[in-house]
Image 1 (cartoon, helix red, strand yellow):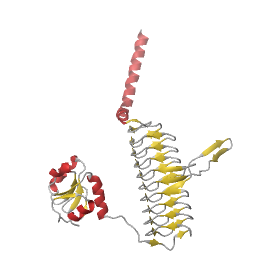
Image 2: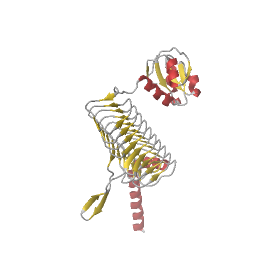
Image 3: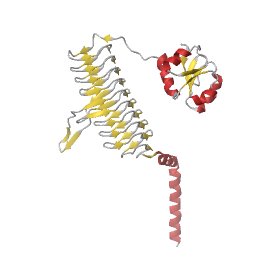
Image 4: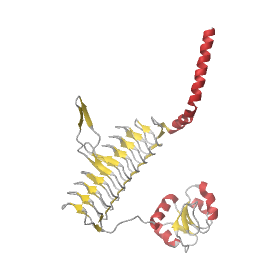
Length: 340
């Protein structure tokens, strides 16, 4: 593909040779002649010295350091991701419904859909246009799904779930399983009926083997643009704010409300019935037992301000030595008291 065509498809300003043939994207340390790459951080600028035959996506401020061709971008990392999609469009099976799929007579599927082998789509389901449903997906009755839905194999979507437009769900996800609710008595545990549902807004992406529990009443809600990594658990009656992002193995207990643009590292745990503000960041393996205000950045367990947590983490390896010194000082003070 000529660089001029790529620039036009990405909507970026071109500097250099418009006729340069671009073979494939590459990371900056592996890029060579005919590659398209990007520079997002100045610390990698030394790589530009050898890239005269490549094209680099850079900010306008970095343009002077480029020896070859360049595309000007306000966000080079984002536009490189868009270039990857140009060269490697996602796999989409042919339009049509496989003969082995079982679709309820009153289910409605929009135009240009692909439904794979072994899928089961229940009564009253409504699915929008251009859906891609890979093999062995099960959609329970009364589920409503918008346009441009992508659902990979072995997903289960339970009844009373609503899903917006341009949502992607990866392999093995379970949406709408019962929330974890029991009442205790002398005889044991009595299950609390989970009669609510799940509401997923537009442009959400849910990673493989994640689970989102149905609400006891009302709806567990995932707001627009939220991104869940693999193996994320969202408990019943939670609300996940727009554009928040959770890394793998994050667990959110029931009835938690999380604001917009939050970012959690891997294996973060959140206690139930708390409120977390907007733009909160949590380091990997943080445990959050209490409410957090807007713009908090926390780490550790129990999670504290990240600066305090870093000091605590730096001090932890010295604890055995400090304990020995304290014991020695205590013994010396005890001897002094005895001598007196």
